Length: 268
Image 1 (cartoon, rainbow, N blue to C red):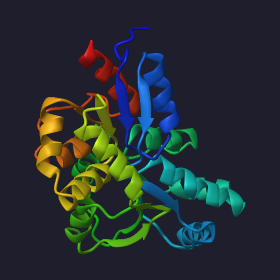
Image 2: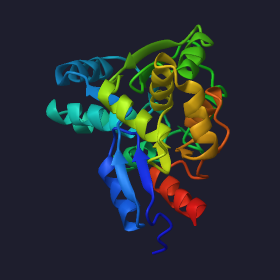
Image 3: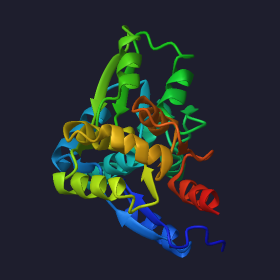
């Protein structure tokens, strides 16, 4: 395997499956530094079970899944309730939309074939496809990210005849102040070579902290000239641009593994 990351320190900003990313980085000769810029708090299992019960009791026209981890949490709740088969059957009888390669793969593994799937793994692409359908009078059961994104909120607002039930199997929470301080110091002292951002939330937490501590201009200069910012996809890249960062790497395939491979090529 081409090394590419020999002697490089790569920061992982995500809270999900960092071990997998760390392993790929280290196989390529680099050092992985896990600096989670967001946390995930799972909802109380009884809350998710209640959401699943309500789903089973209602007539649902559309089901929208935005993350693989969210689908897994809901599927696991159905397992705990002993209604997995009925749950999957109900999904098959509705129109299903999903975002993300992993979400799509998990649905298909359950025997559910989505009517709408984002080609590029983004919420924006999924919503563009959903706009082709008439949602007037439709009941929609929607699993959200750890927060209601502006894009989804705008889509819901643009469909006045749509009846929506939102489900949040997990929520984002702010990173530890110590983590923000450590990473900011490492960046300003140019002690790392790249930062892997996997959500827009991570970008916002880091730059909000830089604003609060008066080092935003210095942080931008570091990213523009010394440390590579890598965004897993278009939405995360847009968040970096909105903070004034233009020098960045975005893999064509929006997956973490692809991002690490592209960083290796960049440094080669």
